[in-house]
Amino acid sequence: MLKLIRRILAVFCFVAVTLLFLDFTGTLHHWLGWTAKVQFFPAVLAANFIIIAVLVLLTLVFGRIYCSVICPLGVMQDLISWLHGKFKKNRFTYSKEVKWLRYPVLVVFIALLVAGVGSILTLLEPYGTYGMIATNLFQPIYQWCNNGLAAIAEHYESYAFYSTDVWIKSGIALALSAGLFVIIGILAWRGGRTYCNTICPVGTLLSFVSRFSLLKVHIDQDKCIKCGLCTRNCKSSCINHENGTIDHSRCVTCGNCIEKCHKDAIYYGRPRKNTQSTMPSLDKFDTSDKSEKPEKPIDKGKRAFLIGTGTAVAVAAFAQAKKKVDGGLAAIEDKEIPKRKNPVTPPGSISARNMARHCTACQLCVAECPNQVLAPSSDMMTLMQPMMTYERGYCRPECTRCSQVCPTGAIKPITIEEKSSLQIGYAVWDHFLCIPTRDKYEDGKPISCGNCANHCPTGAITMIQLDENDENSPMVPSINTAKCIGCGNCEYVCPARPVSAIHVEGIEDHRAI
Image (cartoon, rainbow, N blue to C red):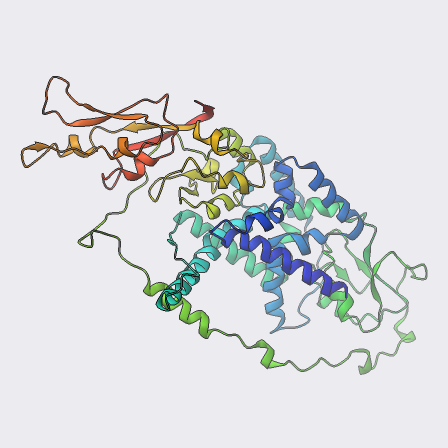
């Protein structure tokens, strides 16, 4: 029963958090957004002392159930280990605590946290790591499947689904996420909770508390026959059946050992009074083959996978991929990201420093952005944290979704009114890239554009003659930086390729204008 309850809760938390990163419509956040805010490290960054106190109290009472129920990266490792268990049973062994790696990692993590260096923290913290994996690996697959269903529905004149653009937000983010998934997956496949009990700083921090938990897994040494089934099924490798000890700092209260014990020698709760401190002689017990129940035959029918539908959906999704064209005649060249002197951080982040100190790089804001203007940073000091980019859209003044979903306080909640007057950057015009000054004339007449001025929501851009003394001089943009909010609409609509003739430069501290 203990294991069943844990599994139900773990599956619910894992699916809920995963759906937050997969859902590009933003509708699920209203019901499931709390699952991101109850994660331990985001609660620390957000200074949410209530959540921190609740998680510590849960650990003091039940042990490290946070790691086996709430943490999505921990549940993902359990799923991978469970799959390996279908092929190879009783594969674990007891191993001593790796103190030389576990505690130095925690010390380095805390030092980086105090110093405000978030680039390395993102590679160690479990929630942020899972967020990167879900955003860069799982979400594109989910979107391809969605587009396939949209194509099928459209064929039958149904619009229950709508297609969305699938794009690689960052090559570095994709490679790093894939590398982390492979490394953690291999560790989970071979050793179960190796990552949690040797590298994860949250697991190490909670291990100090779990030593004093009220309810623990115990071995009744009057009943134990040293068969070793508990040790061979402990994915935390923390049970030493030979001397009857359990390392409670590494135990995640998964219940595997209780389920596998045929003598009812392992139980979860307070220690029993009749439990002896030393292991009894094996002569007291019947050590015949009856001590281990034969394993039930595997029902192969229950392991069958329905892959036909998934394949059809994937094929339909790829079939829907269309080449972007201008009027169906000429291919549109993709834009390149301009070289900004200062990166642009999302509205509500207050400043670049606040973003660097509080962002866990989970990329939930990137996954949820409906305007496709957020992408993971490639800068080493802000690695994987969100930055603004305007190749696929602009930051609409009426959209505040990123500030609504951020669980750490790196992006503070703001209203539409506040965002409309919040300056996160300012536009900069490049004389040599602008089409009217670069191409100058067409059919003997000056080339005109004015896209940036026509689409500026604040009226910060006006068109003026490059040479006021020449009536044939081309019209070029003039920028009033005092009115510019840095939304990036001008950069997005600029027809210059491959780099826009006008781009947004970020400012260190956001300000109201």
